[in-house]
Image 1 (cartoon, rainbow, N blue to C red):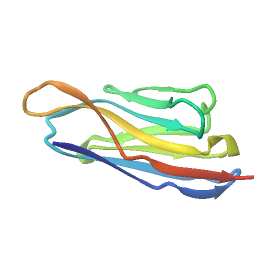
Image 2: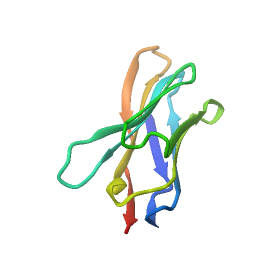
Image 3: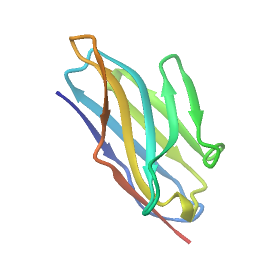
Length: 120
């Protein structure tokens, strides 16, 4: 099967930076869309950033200009560089990817989540 493993979360002061990583492994033939979501306590999970095959990216308005999504296709890894962090960025961040195995059927997979806490 497929696994997504995130890393890079932690505690940072407001104005600081963090880089999240998410590595996909397992039965992988092709990866289409890769994205980062987040969920704060008591709130719905929201899309933060998405990288669509071909280099197209899109961001939530709340993170534009501060966060950058990128991917290394050779490593099946997606990154989220977060700068100028604010307390309202505090959340569990989840990696999401559309991956096909040798069956050529795409399925959506989620990582286990990594906590990002921004102190004021």
